[in-house]
Image 1 (cartoon, rainbow, N blue to C red):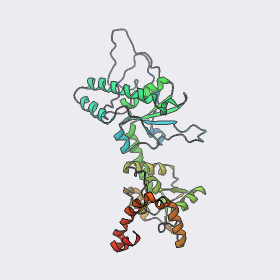
Image 2 (image 1 turned 135 degrees about the horizontal axis):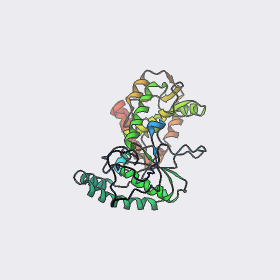
Image 3 (image 1 turned 90 degrees about the vertical axis):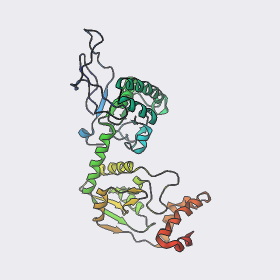
Image 4 (image 1 turned 90 degrees about the horizontal axis):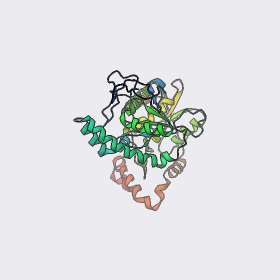
Length: 351
C-alpha cells in the first residue's frame, strides 16, 4: 500500500480521467505538475481532504490483490474487492474474487465516453449524475450494508481513475479502509502476463492416464501431503473429457482462465516440482497458455494404470448427475461427440 490521498492547502492537482476508460494512472494531488486548481476568489486555498484513499501498487508489492481467507489472522487480504467497471468489462475479465459494482452500466459508459471526446465538461457532469445514482444503490446493497466499519475495501476500474475514485471517495467518507488499485484492471492484466511467463520456469511432473483413472484425486492427495499442484481443469471450469462441461455454469472466458492460472503460478516455488494433469492444448473451449503448453510437452510423466472397474466407479462418481432422468438428453448430446472419434456406428452403440 502506498500513498494517502490527503492533500494540504495550496496543493496542485490534475484530476485523473476515466470516463469511458480513457484515462491515465491515478496521481495524488501533491504529485501532478499539470494543472493548478484556481480558487473562486483570490486568497482562498484548498482545504485538506477529510478522507484517505490508499493506492495498492502491484509493482511495489509484486502481488495481485486477494480476498482475506476465513482464517486470515495476519490481515493480509481485502474484505471486499469491488469492480466499478461496466458489466460487460467485468464479464470479459476481472480480478479473482472481485464483485461487480458498476458505477456506469454498458450503455451509460458508451454515452459518457462518446460525449467525452467532444465536450469533457458536459461528459463529467452527465457521468457524475449517473455515477451518484449508482453509488447510492451500491451503498444500500447487502454487499456494503453488511460490512463492519473497519472493513478493508479495494476498488478497481479500467485504469484507476474517475470511476474507482468516485466510489472509493464515498466509501472512505463512510469510514471504511479504502484502497484503489493503481493502474486499475490494465495493471492487473500486465501482472497476469508476468505470472504466465513464470510458468515457463516451473518444474512440471505430468500425471497422465485414461478418463476415470483418478488423476484429479491423485493431484489433490499430493497437495494434502504438502506438494505443489495446479488444477488446470478447475481453473478452466471443465473436467477435460467429452462429458466435462458443466450443466449449469459456462466455462470462464479465456482471460479469466489465464488469470486463475496466473494466480496459481504466483504461489508456486520454482525450486520445487509442480504436479499437473495431462491435458491437450484445449480444455473444453479454453486454450492452455503457450507458456504452459510448450513447457508441459517436455516435462516428465507419471502414468496411472488402474483396473477397468475402478475407472467405472470413478466416472460414475464424477458424473452421477447424468444418471438422473432429467439430464439424460444432455448426456446423449455429449455422447454424440464420440462420432468424431469412433465413427457414427461406434458412437451410436453408446447412445
